[in-house]
Image 1 (cartoon, one colour):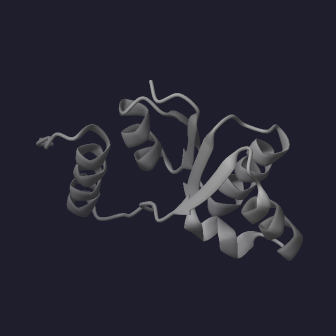
Image 2 (cartoon, rainbow, N blue to C red):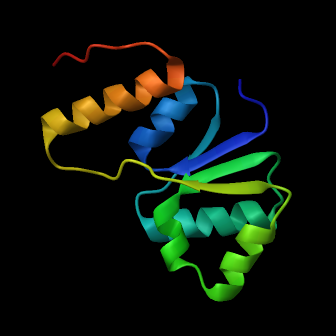
Image 3 (cartoon, helix red, strand yellow):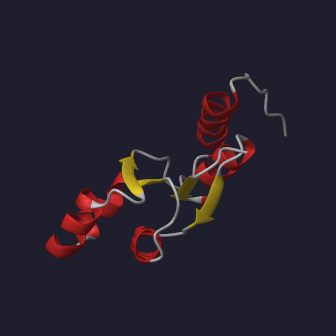
Length: 110
């Protein structure tokens, strides 16, 4: 278990980080992710909170300052995979996330 790390993202991103031992909260939309980021800030989630950088565009100036100034938790925006419709590309993206999260190449078969 990765202590003190919370990842807020789409289901595929959350899966990769969950397999690596991080706590996750899934959001189907950027607005849902925004609400979860603000909730983590309000509840003073422990450690580090990683979230989709697209959330930054949805924050008000006041919310953005709160996120940027927070030192507990540390809130870090990162680029995440967004839901895609192309099946083969989704598999490649999922494999890439898993490889990055757990350090092993996985072959996904249907």
